[in-house]
Image (cartoon, rainbow, N blue to C red; front, side):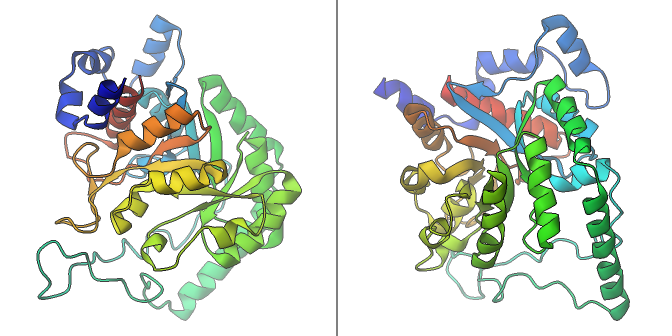
Length: 362
């Protein structure tokens, strides 16, 4: 048994892609994102997606498909193509599908600037720390500020007027396809209390366990009571906070039993170099889901950098095997953040990650 686990921990991408079983799995049906391959596959096999392996539910956050055409219908198609049966759903696709007002500022800022090691630093030094408070978007003009305020008010009015039954209809679409929504990422901490209430009602209608937000004291204190009221969870995601001396989950978890964690194992490992299982074992009963990605550690060159699964240093196999061994009901979600080659696409890469996890777990 120990030898078997060792071989799985040391699974390389080359070995994985070269295995007979994997080649067979990928050759059953070609991926055709805009054709009918999934429909044909269903007609032939009579099956729906199933990404639970060895008792561990593998899924994805739909952010992984941000480079693809959005929309609920496309998300369902991408899940079917990648063999995904459970997702963390980004709310922008959900609300756009239901007719939300268009954001006039969408895409105005672009991605934050990349950080590099300080001049004169030795090879392998970690990137320079970002400015205090993180990336600062450009200063808004008075006209832009007015447009954002107008949009926020339009969104608030739209959300509060939208019948919750509309989310029942969306859930039926996913249920029919055999796909469950375990989390909805509304990130609503800056919304009005009425809109936060709407977010939890919508998530409950979709069958989710709760709503996701980025971790912070103000956000936790604002969302926790509303989550309690609905009998749901306020689920908080980390970035690189653990690299800050003294950072701990304890102060947040003490606020309410409705506070749960979406632990990003990649951000944690890439910024600290500490094995993620140290956090998972300590907080397993407060973790709803784990974002899975492969990264280099903070002492590598390049440091804390996203990698194709199997080419980085994140102990993905150790994480999955721990959850399998313990039988903990923690969702393990692919978050695709590495660069995609021109000959591939995000759906193919998520499928590869799912199969990589399957190879470890079965």
